[in-house]
Amino acid sequence: EIFHTDEIVDAIIIGAGFSGLYQLYQLREELGLKAIVLEAGKDVGGTWYWNRYPGARCDSESYAYSYSFDPSLEQEWSWSERYPGAAEIRSYLEHVADRFDLRRNIHFGAKVVGASFDDATNLWTVSTLDGADFRCRFLITAVGCISSANVPHIAGLADFKGEWYHTGHWPHEGVDFSGLRVGLIGTGSTGIQAAPEIAREAAHLTVFQRTANYSIPAHNAPLGKDEIRAIKEDYPAIRKHMRSNSNGHPYQMPPEGALSVSSEERERRYEDAWAKGGLGFRAVFSDLLTDIKANTTASDFIRGKIRSIVKDPETASLLTPTDHPFASKRPPIDTNYFETFNRSNVTLVDVRAAPIQSITATGIRTTNADYELDAIVFATGFDAMTGPLLALNLIGSGGRTLRDDWSTGPSTLLGVQTPGYPNLFTVTGPGSPSVLCNMPVAIEQHTRWITACIAYMADKGYKRIEADVDAAQAWMAHVDAAAKNTLLPMANHSWYLGANIPGKPRVFMPYAGGLSNFASKSDDIARAGYQGFRMS
Ligand code: NA7
Image (cartoon, rainbow, N blue to C red; front, side, top):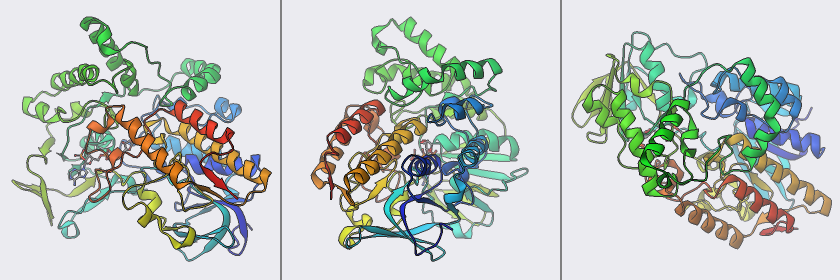
């Protein structure tokens, strides 16, 4: 009965992934508000609802990639592998939705195509593709950061006779590549996960690489009963550690820098981390993301590993990254990625040297060759952070549009509010640390802050909240400065900078100052009566 379009609800949440589900739970169960979720998909899952490509798996350790808000949820759910596959994450979120009876407030198949704020009433009107309008006091976007697929404009795609896919919109029934010649464009986290899986099935796989990437072996494996028991017993301490470090992961970073130990000791620690596998490799030394000399020792170690794994020296050389430091782009982790290039049915094509010129009826044409293909997979990433928000066609106070306001780059305070868009909260927005973190930890922080803010407003009788222009500008300057304290801007073509989308403003979007630091700044602002936010 809650989907009456003429009813005003307290809050509309867009998206039923990790963010939206927990935000709904908090508003309904903790504040007693009337809240609904509008979700484009047919079920919960968000990112994991759409990303069903071969090899789709989270790079966070499964036990850490979960909610911490309910200890009995923690105890009753058991992950089967070290890293959770897409299907298992979907099952987890379906379990959460059922367990907390969230589905009754979720409208599935409701794709939001517009939302506008009315200054006279302080209400948002939200429109969906099927023509329905919903009104609410607070609008909360939980649309993810890497959910707007980027299919590059390549001439001739419409002429291609085979099937083509973007990894972020994978057919739910799956794709059978057996007997096919498959082209895979992109060697980011996604392409690196998909390549080994596609190579096993296809007649031939051609990987079109523009930029060679560092990748650390994942060493995925089933989780044993004893491991699960130990994790469950230790959950309070694990969660505390995850919340109190810079990226929300469960890894322990030693205090030493890479150059403070002997070269033998350094090598030994890298070998250990390589053997353990996973994103913990970034935490072998404290300064890998801040000191280029320290970083070079790690980058060199990985380059050496690539050369030792890949048998053909020319292919090994092409796969060896030289143009950016390790982890200045989001570092992938893999299962047999480099090994895949030792297979006789896999070819690597360097599209940096000879770029893709067009797609023809029968394949991909580069400036120096034609590749005959039956299917093309675009693992070409996303219009990250701003893309999913701009796609909502938001109209703020006085008829301003987010598209205009962000034409030279996003401006937010704490990633959570944008000047000119009263009562709009953006979970994991640009200016938040989310994409540099183990996501659920960032999401829990963001949504709790929003819930507390709404509770504060209700308590004081405020109807309207809006970030101050000056405060947002100062925050974005701080976001920029925080990035410049790290090596992250050295990858000058990364999606962190918006550089992967032609014409997108170059602004370093995520907050690189660390999650725990971000959380304490957010708390300070709240304690000071939401400093930088205007309430009326
Ligand atoms: P990414 O990390 O943005 O990777 C996209 C890849 O596609 C990357 O190798 C790009 O090369 C390549 N790309 C993009 N456009 C083209 C064109 N036009 N021609 C050739 N190659 C192209 O996206 P992912 O999906 O792998 O990962 C996104 C995030 O999901 C990841 O960071 C994790 O947080 C999870 P480039 O490097 O730009 O030269």
